[in-house]
Every structure is written in structure tokens, then in C-alpha cells.
Length: 213
Ligand code: AP5
Image 1 (tube, helix red, strand yellow):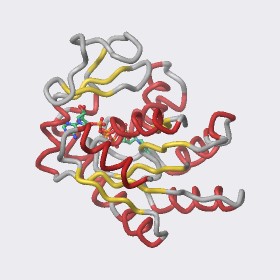
Image 2: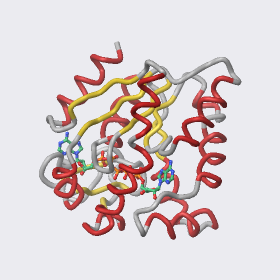
Image 3: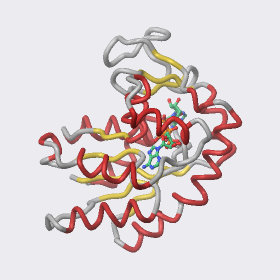
Image 4: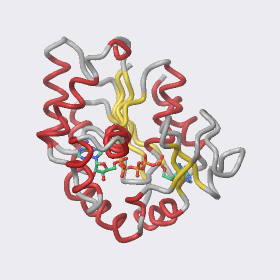
């Protein structure tokens, strides 16, 4: 199963991608997590990505496309993957389509999680993320069992640098300008699944899994 997650920043892509990946036994690949791991390790890629991420802008396609296409060549992607945060621009979606079609395959589902902008700011201020396994929590809506500790791997949870309200507003602007057109792109490919992301996380998951069957 090859799945793409769509939706505004904070719509719940990461939360649900992790659940879907577990359900289907396929890897969850988040370009945001890959960039954050590179920033933490102070790699050249990380330093370049940070410049853009801190402003709420997209990392340039020249950097992102090659990185993602080589990731999905890895062995663990043989049976599929859940892409969280890629594609984010039409050129990214075109490159992915071409790379898959060269192997006679394609995206099976693009899951669009719909949440109005008004709800996003609240969600972001309460988000806590695991720097090790990518687990995502919310201090009110989806708290970990033990405060500040990841349920999945026991590591410390942190607040993301780009979750400041002013950066979130920029990220939303970037989303509407460059990423929202992908909804039509995948509608034309006949693989679009739209779900209401304002429901409880468990209900959103149920709706997604129901639609993927
Ligand atoms: P990235 O890490 O992908 O961030 P994003 O798309 O902005 O999405 P988020 O991770 O912020 O939100 P999410 O939808 O995953 O929501 P979550 O599940 O965490 O990208 C960061 C940056 O990297 C970008 O700005 C860009 O600079 C760069 N980048 C990444 N990919 C790129 C690409 N392809 N090209 C160029 N640049 C790229 O949920 C949010 C919060 O809400 C959590 O606290 C969660 O617990 C809570 N929550 C989840 N579901 C619910 C619910 N149903 N009800 C209530 N609360 C909920």
C-alpha cells in the first residue's frame, strides 16, 4: 500500500500516518522528521533546511525531491509506505508520480485530513513531539501516559521550534499557496480520500481505515 498524507500543518498527518503505518506494517516517512533529525545532527542538509523551516517556508524542491526519492528506494519500502509531508508542491508530486510509474506502480491513496485554520493554532501550541521516534502528542487532546515522555519509545517530548504562533501563520500561508493544489492533483488521479480532521484522533483513524478498505 502506497499512501500520501495531505492536510494543513497541524491537521494530524503525523498522528494518523504513524497509526496507518502500524496497521499496514509499512514505514512512516516524514520529510519534516528527516529534516529535524539532520538539524539535530548539524549536517549540511540540516543547516540548509533550518534556514527555511524557521521562517515557515518550504525547503527547496532541489533538496527535498532527491532525498525522498532515494528514501523510498530503501528495502523497508518494498511493500509500500506512508508519506507524511511529501509531496508538498506540484513539482514534488510530478516527480513522485514519474519515479513510481517508472517502476509500473502508483500511489494507492492520498488521504486529506481537513481542519479549518482557526483550529490549527490551538493544536500547535499544545503539541509535543518525540525527537527519537516521531511520536506526536497534545497536552490536552492526545496526552502521553506519562507527562513529557513518549509512550512509544520512552524518550523525552519537546515543543517544536516552528510551533510559535507567528511561524504557524506563515506555514498556513505556504500551505494554502503551494500545497493545497495537490488536493485537485490527487482527485484527478482518482485516489483522493477526504476525512474530517476535527473529530477525535481515534475517530479520524477509524474513518481513514474504513475508507482504505
Ligand atoms: P512537517 O514536519 O511536515 O510539518 P507540517 O506539515 O507543518 O505538519 P505538522 O507536523 O506540523 O502537523 P501534522 O499534520 O503532522 O499534525 P500532527 O499529527 O503533529 O514540516 C515541517 C517543515 O519542514 C515545513 O514547514 C517545511 O519547512 C519543511 N518540509 C517538510 N516536508 C517538506 C517538503 N516536502 N518540501 C519542502 N519542505 C518541507 O498534529 C498536530 C497536533 O494536533 C498534535 O499535538 C496532535 O496531538 C494534535 N492532534 C492530532 N489529531 C488531532 C485531533 N483529531 N484532534 C485534536 N488534536 C489532534
